[in-house]
Image (cartoon, rainbow, N blue to C red; front, side, top):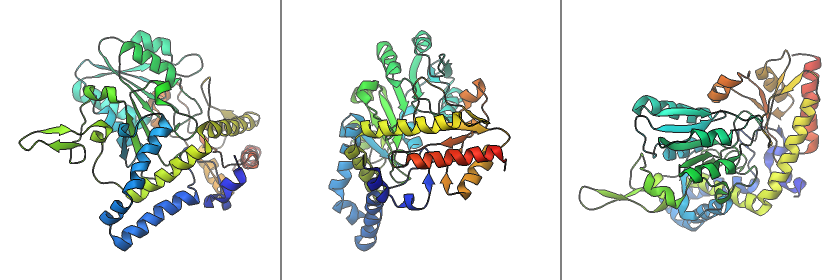
Length: 393
């Protein structure tokens, strides 16, 4: 991996040390050109006409995402964000009073709210699976909790507030053995390291373009295993997802497109495609290796800094690192680092409600390097943190 070349092709690297890739990564010039170029074409010849001219490139986005995930193009639906993709999957699972949804303690906040809404609406039961000794979902406890009332296993692969990588494939083996649908939120993992739906064994997977894939904001996707379709009832129906039968009925279109809507931001979609192509060309194994090294380096430097506590859980950890400085509010750390040209963010406990019930972590500073970051940037950020502990701001 030629990091210098990658940085040269990333305009944002010239001005900032960007360690907020778990929020939104820096787009490459190639991705930026794809977005702006299509917007310019829309302005010159019209939106419908530009979409028609780009039809082949749009089709290639589905193929690229399928290759990225180890699935098929007809198993991909495009969305404007990962939350809508996840909701399209979740609300398609028929739930009745007494049905159970099993999830982990590190589930993302929006997903948790949807579970709670289902509990309120239909009387479904939300069961939180305990963590094991490493702080990841306990797969033995998960298997023991499954019964004939269990209608879904929902898991966040990598939480928003920590470096934990949940054992998604082990959960998949439990789900397959029990015959229970399995929805994986891979928002923080796709693009950060290899994610293969066959290896994992999930039935549904959602992701976003803006994070480690380095795509534009306003892009998301859903992968749906073909064999699960007859067990799902999409919540939204419209002219993209269904076909009128000529009378007073309709039928769903084949594949995952039944979850999608007709209107798309084609400029953003083409930008997503450019970002996916870049990830595939670089290789997710190589990307994952470098990200793990940068994450380990960031975590190790912070752990070695007096007055800094790292909060990451898990046997396997990734390039998201969360920490707290003694006597310094995390929001203040974020603001102070920004003054030095370093982009990070802070976590919100309410975005990981079940983890808050368990550990009650304070707001944390979240560092998330990506493969185009350098070791010098990571070390500089850690040194700035150390200086804040020595001289609180």
